[in-house]
Length: 376
Image (tube, rainbow, N blue to C red; front, side, top):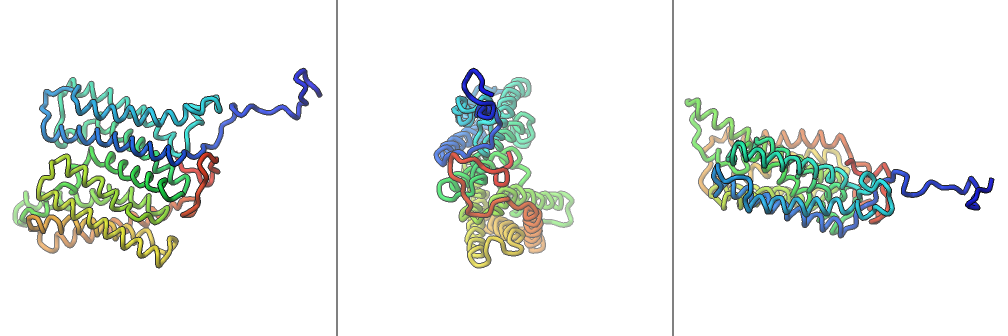
């Protein structure tokens, strides 16, 4: 049948702007810009954390230069994330739903969580004043900001997972993983041993207080190992990435060094921890070169090696700076238990393998099939 438009009914097509499309990949440039803006956001977080630690007082109020840097970094990162979809508004009628590049839609949603957390933070500071120490870590507004920030700055990590590419795309993904780890740990860092010197305190089994402090120190090493293990194994299970362990541990370590103005002996312990991560990177690269990325037990071995190297490096640095006073049963047992935790975490991670094999790449601008698209 011929209509007034001169087209047959079989020629009628649904306009391309009406259907829901599989997300295209962001360009490498998009990911690099996003990672750089994420660095700026983390820089704002760092200045605010430094101010909380060193110069702010309970009555300082919400409107400080440090909060201005933090929320300026957020505004720039959020604006870039939304621009990546908004620029497709002429192609997709529902650009706000379907226009996001692979890996970015979750980050865009997280901007709302961050913004709500920021407004809540202003209200919280107005009522209760500035928080310090463990109170700052458990402040509900800070936890909301940390959750939203973690999802936002890891957009490039998910984009890298969707593409499977190396080169600058991989570099942006590794930076993104490091930034996400910083954001995820900054609020709860006090519950870890990353900046702790607990092992330098003498252990007296006859005193209840001494046993309690030592137990908290061991728990701190376990919690810290878990915080660092999860992002590392999420990266390592997809492909061997030289430098991933060093970037993730080094990012968290550098943040703590600057926040606490390179306080010793904690600084020596953190440097040792980063050195341990570098050793783990080298050994895991060597193992992948010889055993291959699909070798049996690859992830449990990686998890155990990573946890042992990072924990032992932390204790070695602390020992060189001031001396580890825990008895051998305590410090050696702590290293062993973190290794078991790493192996078990690696075993769990191995149960959910990525759909695409390492090295597979999709060209920028191409659509990603459902089998290779990263979850958002």
